[in-house]
Length: 265
Figure 1 (tube, one colour):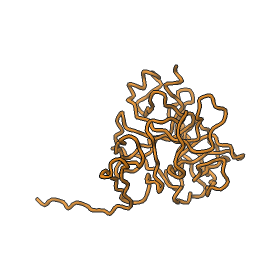
Figure 2: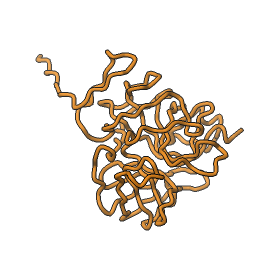
Figure 3: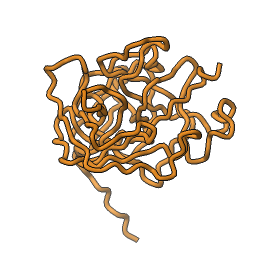
C-alpha cells in the first residue's frame, strides 16, 4: 500500500511568538481570517477598563452608523458583499456600514462607507430571550479588500471550540461601566469560552445549546461585538493562545448579546 505524499505548501506569512522564537505559525494563503496587521493582545483585558487595539489589526470589524454618522452597533465582514451583526441592533437599509475604521474621531483614515442593499434578520429572533440574535447585511456595493479591510472566516461544521478556548471581542464599547461617552478608538478584550453548564449558573434557562458563552471575572463588554477564535502565536501575547481553527486563521463564532456576570450582581 502506497503512502500518500505529504502536501507541501509555501507559507505566505510566518509569525513567531515573541517569547518563544521557535514557536511559529505558518499562514498558508492570504484570505479570510488573516489580518495584514497583527493584533497584539495583553491577556485577559477588558473592554470595560480595557485596551486599545492596534490600528487595522481587526480588518473585518465594521461600524454600523445611522445617516447622521452616529455609531450604534458593530459587525464583521464575512465576504466582500456580506456583514454579520446582531438582530437586536435593528439595522435598516438607510443605515451605513463603515469599514476600515479605527478612530471614529479622525477624518484622516481611509475608510469605506458602504450602503446596505438588504437586511436579513433571523425571523425567529426574540428580543426578550435574545435567542436567534443574528442579522445578515447584503451590501449594495462590495467592500474593497485592503490592508485594513478583509473578511473573517466562518467556522466549519467540524470545528470544535471547547471551554477555555481564548477568543477576542472587539468594538467601540464603553471603557468604564458608568461612562457617558464611548471611546473613539477601537477597543479589544480577550475572553475564554465557558461551558454552557457554567453559563447557566448565571443565566439559567436563557442559555440554550446553540449559544456560546465567553467571559471571565471582571471582564465585560458593552457593545454588540463579534467573538473571534484566536490562533496560536499572536505576537506580543502574554499568554499561550490555543490553535482552534485550521491553518491558524481567525474564525468568527457569532454576534455578541449583552449579558455579563457582573450585571447579575
